[in-house]
Length: 471
Image (spheres, helix red, strand yellow):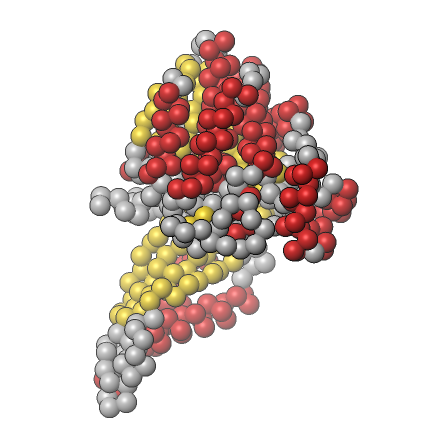
């Protein structure tokens, strides 16, 4: 594999730019431009604005089969503004957002892997094609789902990706599918004291819906989850019967079909709430993602690549830096860090953490059929083409994703080592697939067997477009 060293300064700058921009879903304009500018400067042919998303892109280099996709993300999270490198919470000025899921690193490593694979394919012309997919809006926007719906992965032979985390591990098992929708109730305003009989409260409908769903929780499977957030309470005047109110629901289950059945139950409860309050209900389908279809063949490829590259080691200064975050959490939380995916032997995970709390190790590859409690739009890609992913240790063990602690660590030397490690692992895994087409065939055979003849059906209705489309 070619050396990443010549690219490290460019990648460090790219990560810092995306971290600083901290742009939310579908608005990653500067982040996407920084990535595509770098890829174009190194000879990639880039298609921008794909799948009706201005910040989505596909960058390609090489020719022929196999076509290997490297998936990158770069959207931030709202409300997680944080100064870099601090061990106490301190929002930075000028931007309320932050990369609390490490997507600045995720996207940067995808670009780095693309550059390494460009070097490989230059030395092996006609040996295959690498595509770096710029995937916006993973955080609540389902960017890859729209890309899959548009057929952008149909000719891909395998897809590899990663996620920043606290430990180095292949992400085994599956995760949850989900559907998100907004429920808007329209009532009738009236004076709450003088003429309450004339009013019909939309807020009452929201509250009754929430109560109904909470009672439904007793009759859901253990692997199912339902969350909600009230977006509109109808005003701040208690002496006015609220004429409008809205609640956003996120419904999760083990498969697309199970999620749809659970979602239909939630819709039925909303209709019941509208009947009880004599209000009008409208439902706006917001987004959805499919559950992940695991691929053990590709998982082994990534594990072998991780072992070959070797876990990044920590300096004494880096260990001290990580320990400052861990000291705030306590030893129990550090020891019980769950990682990024189900692991069949939690006792072994704890032993490794206790032995090396800096995370400079690689968990053994132990495939499992367990379902992780969480969702990602990588699931939609996994229905179309074989996909595998791994986690790279970038943050202090014990610190949680979607937190200010991860934002604070995103640009540090530990995070950058994890980013470079990920780029090298992705590239090495892809090179294995270029060199051994029989592995690509085996990965496809596994996917076909798991699907059992079932074809991918996008969980987002065809009339629903990415948020902001057409504006």
